[in-house]
Length: 179
Ligand SMILES: CC(C)(COP(=O)(O)OP(=O)(O)OC[C@H]1O[C@@H](n2cnc3c(N)ncnc32)[C@H](O)[C@@H]1OP(=O)(O)O)[C@@H](O)C(=O)NCCC(=O)NCCS
Image (cartoon, rainbow, N blue to C red):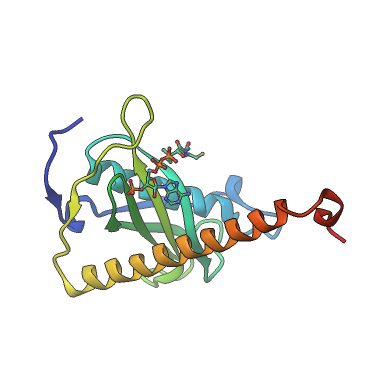
């Protein structure tokens, strides 16, 4: 594990990965299975989280994943990942997914975007502190603000659902069954 540093910029850990899709990744329609795209995005985010935090980090949540276009067998798929926001031990990593269609050299399609929460962990699997994030550009600051909105919504949603469950578990069992 590297030494503890106070802050890192998004560009320190930003990465781009590229791979060629194959038939083994196809779904029944012959396009690339959505789970394959999620796996690639998760792996990209994992590399970014490990770079930013200087050690191991695990996926805690996939906050949002939008599929905008199908990916076809033979397309080149590229993922771009960067840290958008950091807490004490958690980090939001944004991943943009693009393809270069096999039959349209040079064309670039934005096929999806995903937002992962990773937690940096120590050898015992407990959260460990991560360096602060030092945004460098207006775009970095926009991403940080958007990540704060996602986090606020996530926490509010969790509180609301916890309150519903608490009310529901206060009901007698016969009232709790779905009708
Ligand atoms: C992620 C994990 C380490 C969190 O452990 P935990 O004991 O719940 O941790 P804490 O409650 O102390 O929270 C630690 C941080 O994680 C964040 N966190 C935990 N669960 C989260 C979730 N579902 N979504 C977003 N953030 C989450 C907390 O907000 C906190 O952030 P902060 O330190 O920046 O304030 C633990 O749940 C874990 O190991 N999960 C399995 C991870 C894994 O195997 N991933 C691969 C999936 S196949």
